[in-house]
Length: 87
Image 1 (cartoon, rainbow, N blue to C red):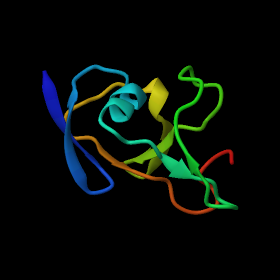
Image 2: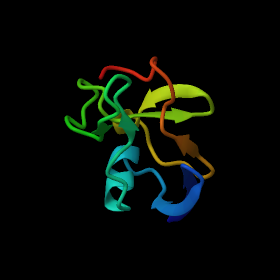
Image 3: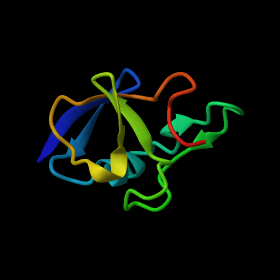
Image 4: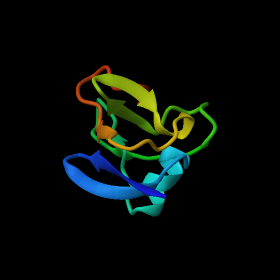
């Protein structure tokens, strides 16, 4: 079943229970964050929680998208500031 989530203010329908990083990629989201120094775009790389390239922000907490499942009502944003993870 598809459920609504919001990414950067845009609502999208993703498959409930799916890997969040994979579902966002399939929905056309390529850049999940930017590096804090150069601003280069980053997206999922390892898909197993080792590289931290897929960091996102949910309810003010920075998380790895590849380690989460899609749930209805998620409000997802790109992390802001220098503390947005490995760059």
